[in-house]
Image (tube, rainbow, N blue to C red; front, top):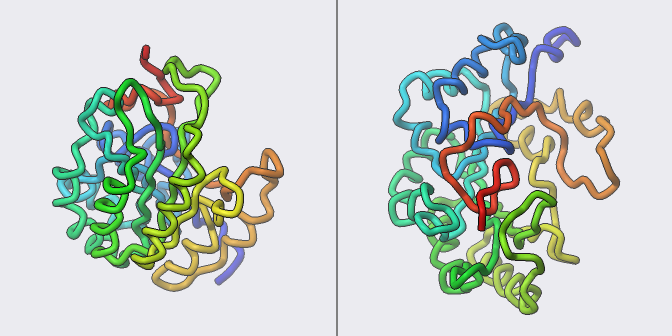
Length: 266
């Protein structure tokens, strides 16, 4: 492959800033089709990997134009956040887990490889009587994901952003013990769990160019070196850079109180 052909490929995120799939799939179609000034390069370019971050992936399967657009990407991967808070005051418009899991077999089939689906258990927190620091809840969700043959998961305790308005400030005193228990559950299920910001349990990047290359249908590693060489903001920055086509507006529809993009009053 020539240098020119390599430069036409992109790794794209949609999106760490907003749940584009759930909140605004029509705009996501425009972004991925190069129909905006910011993403015009995608009009003639090839998306090597599209990483979708979402709490509700159902539009991937039911929105016809989005599904068609995703089908033109060489590879689609999904970071699916399931916290157990769906439908609660913390995540008022996120589907409950019992509703969401009914679509995941079809989602894995669409992605073409269960390793392209990663479970994110984030944030872990206690707030006004709500808590997902519950190993029974964690195990229930993990066991279902294990039936889908996923291989990776991430977890992170709530870390308030400077503009957070929730009355939660510190990790619970039993965080280390719970983190260790989560790792044990996942080990038994053959799921490799990384707990962000926890010593010895923080094992990998949540955005990993080498991982996407290994899953690529053609095992295309042409972009890996480029992404690994891009300077990261700090020495502790633990994810490879990726072109994020989303932004903070329009506001995500989920209404999560802990959201760092548009926090609601706590």
